[in-house]
Amino acid sequence: MSRQKIAAGNWKMNLTLEEGRLLVEALTQSAGTPKAEVVLCPPFMHLTMVKSLLAGADGFSLGAQNCHQELKGAFTGEVSAPMLKSAGVEYVILGHSERREYFGETDALLAKKVDRVLEEGLRPIFCCGEPLPIREEGTHVAHVRAQISASLFHLSPDLFSRIVIAYEPIWAIGTGRTASPEQAQEMHSAIRSLLAEHFGAEMAGQTPILYGGSVNAGNAASLFSQPDVDGGLVGGASLKTEEFLQIVRSF
Ligand code: PEP
Image 1: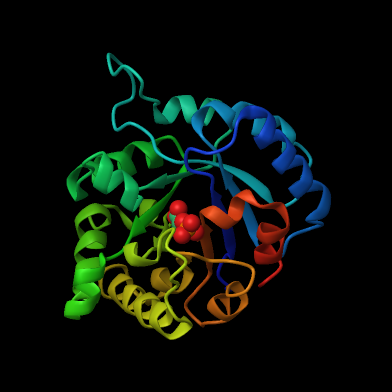
Image 2 (image 1 turned 60 degrees about the vertical axis):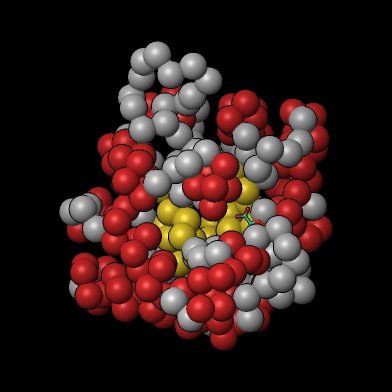
């Protein structure tokens, strides 16, 4: 079975409603039928609008950038997995390095968020990746293995089969410094081996592993041509119509 290919756009905290509408309209009008699934991840307040704009757009799905670990309650300012589901969301980015760094999200908290998202039938895009000092020290593979095992290895094989992994070296996020295709492939292959050790070769073979970190129109094709790179999680370049469309066409 060939693995699912995904180009996900993480808008982060960018774009007004009007700017978001214009971007989605431009993307859906020009994308044709994409070769990869295109997952748009706008801020929470854009979700219902983007959902309506995507009606009838082949190959596009909706993602959120985070969700709370509890189902409901007195958590002012938070958004739950059932709310996301009711807005037509299919994917939820969890464990982005910005959430880990600025909002103190730990491996243990992320394990709970993963559970909630899966309980609602949504698919986590689980982010992992090392900071620069860990890369320079040469312990990056061990770092990422630890993140994945701490937040995902409690799952049953059935639930794990819905996970998408995004490897995002922190030193490459928003910096314009991309991992080389060889560096990406080395880590993606190590992640797939780890999944094979725990869940078996068949599961490892079907899990999409995306690369994130300064993906752009110029480097996407060489990254996506690596055997274990199944697409990208794209930040800055997903806000620019032509740039993101070229990334989507790079498979
Ligand atoms: C991201 O936000 O996940 C990301 C990879 O950002 P950028 O593409 O801007 O580096």
